[in-house]
Image (cartoon, rainbow, N blue to C red):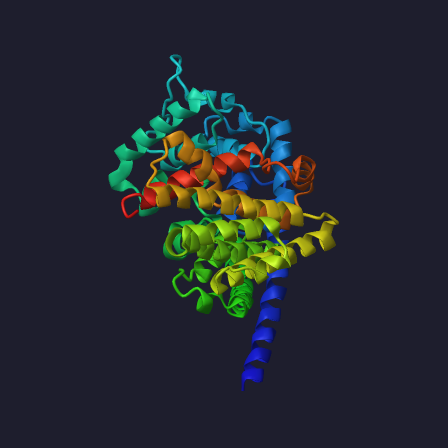
Length: 436
């Protein structure tokens, strides 16, 4: 009976995949239809992004946007605030130069934003979204955001709940995979939105969502098997078991099916980090933690024959085997030996955890600067992003890390990694400081 169910599942999956391919061709033709109005093509691209299927058409979308950029397409939009702001946001979102001058048509002689249509909800929402792709010092976009929020608040009583959400949580802050779920729900409940979309786009989004969800489900089964094989759930009963949460986060970071290796490794490393954090925060004595930190720094089999507690030996073995396996994949895929980077990143995280354990052990209260200097590392962002970059096989980034790697010095991380990790640290502390 189980075999029959598996066969039925495979047949259904095959049909869904075939339907997906057919729908992708239809949507691609729709996207490349040059006779479509500029505003309509922008809306289609925005819909594909919102519904989580733009990854199938990245090359086409980028080429269309580059063409719009080269031909100064915003001049054709005249006084269409919604389309102009959408074009601005999409250009910047794809890393294509877009000047704030594109929005000058919507300012008066004093430089203040003006509303040709005081009830242009779509225009105000689009302007609000565009304002979140500002570079430092672009005061005009700060003004655009304030103007859009003011107008939307005035219209609030007549607005849909979906519009209220867009004010509170702009697209730039949302998780794309969750945005796709929300968009599908909105198009299912809102007849006006449903009718404004080409049926092929919506059908592709539904089919693709189900296929991706099936991929994620199968991967979670495999990651769960790995977790049971490590035995950490039994050997570290005091630690939090957050495997599913870690996989969920990994799937949000890298949702597309081809990124399976990245999802798997991030879920595994994330789960190990949760347990490691509990070892340093809750369970290990300071002397045990110092010995464990040295063991991670040595990264050899001798650590397993030391006087480390059995639960620490299990933790150490899981870290080594997981990162070694991940490094082997990168070597096979691109020829890079990234294991030295993984070793150093794990050791630096453990050293940073040990510093926090020492503060607690000695009753110290570090100053803010000292805390943050250590805290961006204990955020675990550097370790996770290192694994993510290498599993995505970002060649330029891996080259940079390997060039700057020196066994005797601390890891040199890109400024982007450091700043993202600092944000992660501060957000985490804002959420937990009262309890801790």
